Length: 163
Image (cartoon, rainbow, N blue to C red; front, side):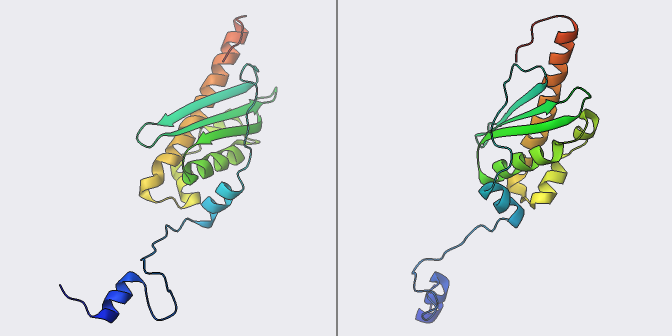
């Protein structure tokens, strides 16, 4: 198929002097919430995994290599007083982790377990190809709560608490 020189230039992105680059540049536009949480992640770090008031959730997605560690710290009444995360993965995974830590603070165990990946995905406006990031965040929350419950049960039985 033959193209006229102007049509060829338009396809390559060389329109007059507007864009002198001879390459078609296609950028992936992320929602401002993703960019905000990626550029300024909240609650990055970790707690002592052997602290009996800390639950640790470590989850991964083998298909993309994302790994997420989310920790929650409880007070004596069962409220989450703080949360931390460390994530190895794409910007969407980091943003989902950051959002999750913000959403769990100040909530009870029961409230936290109602947070769904669909809510995180909607908040971040994740495209279908990135939905696994919000699923990881939900799984990490559940894993952290499970770990905390196990520690509390072990402590009630008089066992030494180790993560």
